[in-house]
Amino acid sequence: MIHVIATIHTAPGRRDDFLIAFGELVPDVRAEAGCIEYGPAIDLATAVSNEPAREDVVTVIEKWESDEALVAHLQAPHMLRYRDRVKDIVVGVEIRVLEPA
Image 1 (cartoon, rainbow, N blue to C red):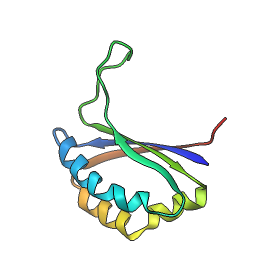
Image 2: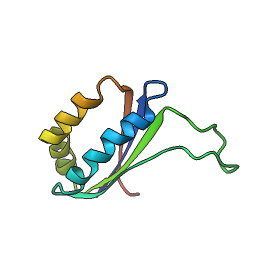
Image 3: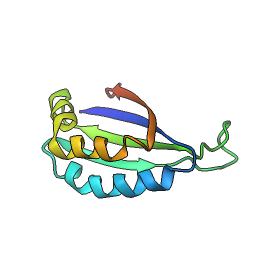
């Protein structure tokens, strides 16, 4: 199993627009072979955090059975349509692929 943490930076004030498009994508991704977990999260302002909440960031938390499943996911037709749909909303993406220690 591998873990993926994707940090999506949206254009100022466009996070809600992104979350709508992303929400429509989630069922297709969860139905993919090898997908264990896939969902968005946003920063929560709390006394525990030592950083301020980021208003234009969505963190996607993923778990995949294998690197091959992740590669197939990135090439899936619904992912290509999604990337085209959000190209004017997303200004940056950082992806971390991790393995359990």
